[in-house]
Length: 248
Image (cartoon, rainbow, N blue to C red; front, side, top):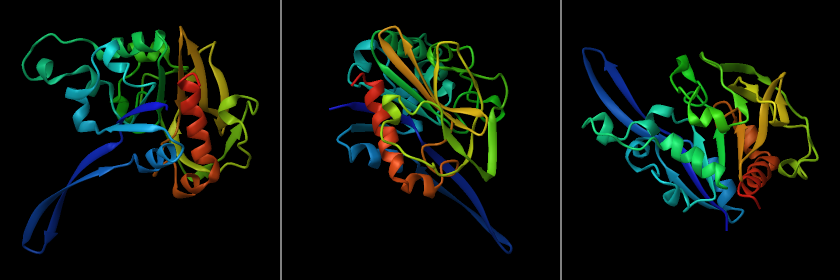
């Protein structure tokens, strides 16, 4: 059984409600992992979700700890959440650089996917901050130094580049439209599998004994809308991508 850790894909929102003279605040916790989790578990994949607020303290800190998984998916979680363990951020202590450890694990045979989002790649206002990190070095992408989001509310058309790759086996077209993505370049040894408009959408790369991939859009709404999630190719795409990253 393929074992996957999905880190991120959660958020806490605070709202202020004004009712005439009076006001009050409310807080809600939400997750966006459902579509991907359901698609993978439906194919027998063992999915562990680590919400964003748990990542700073609980994200694996050793190659042995990453050994509990075959694939790690970083989805809408900024680099600082992984870099800054509470012992460093709150108590000024030295801690391991978990981005370096993750890269070491991939070189030794692990699989890594970065999915797009406001806190992926360089992200909203450049705040995701993966450029020039150890993760930047191993992904197929070349991450821009600025806000790299592309909003396409009118819909952007994906197109297949390499239909013969195992990740895309049996996935017909046309693909549903996407409503946004992160824009990046590709390293010379990256293999482009699909585009969105004129930009890379899905690419893979061999790194040492391991494998990496980038998916430029979300794994669910808003960039990856309900029509895409409901498309039969959605589950097949991410299932085959996950198994390929695991070396299956």
